[in-house]
Length: 273
Ligand code: A2P
Image 1 (tube, rainbow, N blue to C red):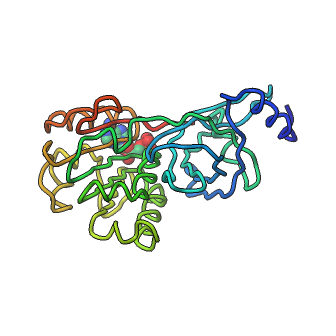
Image 2 (cartoon, rainbow, N blue to C red):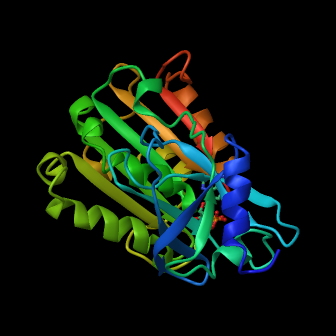
């Protein structure tokens, strides 16, 4: 199918009430040659919980949809949908997705789901969100949700990337929250962003696993070591990072939760295109 196929896409979407809807690109921002974010129209009736993921994609040459799971980076109250994506030069989807412009169409699945939701955790005082790379996306949603601050006294987001430029999205977003009309007053004194790099010089360097193990994270933040009676955690990033952080959570006595059985921490791997 050619580029002038929107009519066909719409017909296909209408023909399959469970298939993806076709949404319009509203904005695109490139951070580095590996990372960008974009915003889409949100269809009426599209409901999700902050922190969930959904399938998004584009039509292939043969007219069939090519879809991948993406965490929704916008909060559940937002009228638009935001996504944060890696660009993989040979990636079947991201190599095309990185070229989208406002006005273009993107396919959106109808069934958001996921475990990085507040309801999958038992009540606590301090919420950690551990992320690497594009694994920050679900937390970009949760830090903009007032519910997060209603449930926790302290919210600590960690973001580790290879280079300083890859921290741009998280740093800009968290910085902008103090002026946010909805959560601006809630975040003051409650929300902390802890950024580190692993491959480029930066004031704070090291893998998050190392910084948990040697206690530097807690010392820098002025908080006590992990405690299952007060601390809750979510993690999102590469599979290896998740497994390693999960082992540290278990060692500290926290148990893994799910939607069906909430507990002290939940995990989701970051989805690459
Ligand atoms: P490193 O540079 O030491 O590999 P990527 O861009 O490959 O997704 O990685 C994002 C960040 O996650 C990098 O800073 C990387 O560190 C870090 N990372 C990769 N694997 C692990 C792991 N097993 N535990 C903690 N951090 C990790």
